[in-house]
Image (cartoon, rainbow, N blue to C red; front, side):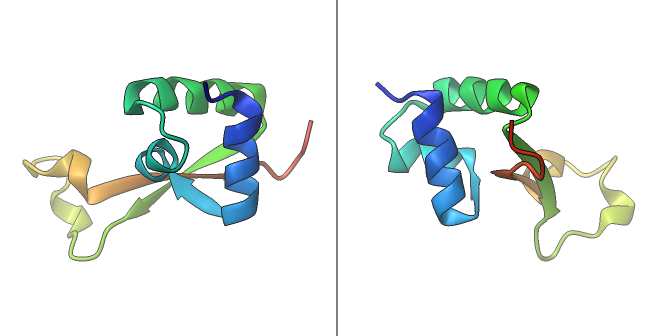
Length: 82
């Protein structure tokens, strides 16, 4: 079973990763991975970074049907390690 240390170490080794990448790498169901990433973020161990995908016209995001698909959330190590 994946634990918080394995997730944190995978992010530290790879720089920035999204929940789907971590889920596949650590063979963990995506909803469980997202919950663990949320906990690590709350603890201040990692930070989430939202990145706009290519081809997105941000002026129309509020009315865009693909709004969740335009932005991808990545996780990286926090600037302050605790």
